[in-house]
Image (cartoon, rainbow, N blue to C red; front, top):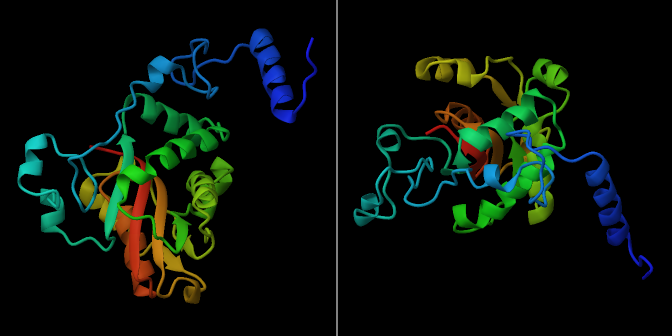
Length: 253
């Protein structure tokens, strides 16, 4: 028998033994994972993630129903972006908030499956180059949780995603520059007008000198109407940021 020569071979061997004794189950459908390398989702469930692809709005990133939209212009704005001037330059999402992706996010946030953060951040990293024409951000800032929500959840899901993305891009992550000083209700529970009011004035900037003149990439898990991202962008630009873009894991379409 050939000797095991490196750490990776040992890790793979140990994983193989664990898989035989305690088979891994898909987070989404609970079936035994036999054909996936990620350890969280079976190939069938993974194939059902609806990735957002062009054509989508150049502003908020919301996908258009028809590819005919591209005949007008690749720079086409959706009706919402034509009616409202957002404070962020553009927002992009990996996929649609439904099915597999929705269940993964729920497991990550509400079932405290913290280890999913690395897997979900990997999905974001793999799609980053397809969403932005240029990756030239100076710093990354996660949309923050209020301290009360953080105590309940025990970890900040957007912070973990931001740290992985920052490490991959070799861009610093400012986790304390933007704070949610007022507790807010979950945006998914509210109507559109209520969402705007819910986050209005909820964020503040600390150590503003760190963001002055900077191009910032905001990271979050779910884009609903854009109210949260917009409020964060507004306060960051008010404090001197030159540009704010947003990258999220999912979008409600």
